[in-house]
Image 1 (spheres, rainbow, N blue to C red):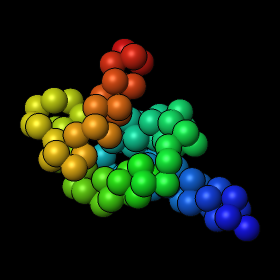
Image 2: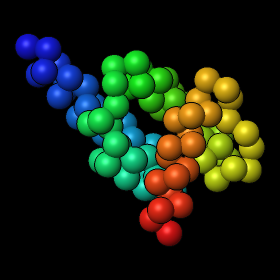
Image 3: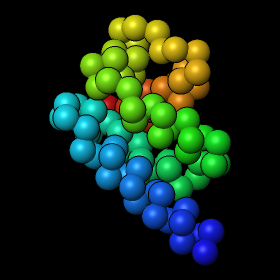
Length: 88
């Protein structure tokens, strides 16, 4: 039952990652979700879910390094930014 709930959570987070509102964030977060969500621990998924509640304009500035991410999100934003850099 727990694995099924975990799978449903991953599907939900994948969907939320791909349907943001700003196309750039759709692309960035859906790529991150596809490649990394399955390997995140429960606490990291909690943090990612909280990140998805943030404003897209803020997220984009954090990921692109225009503005420093809040300390709480900095490691996760770093992972997302690294993935963006690898795919250029």
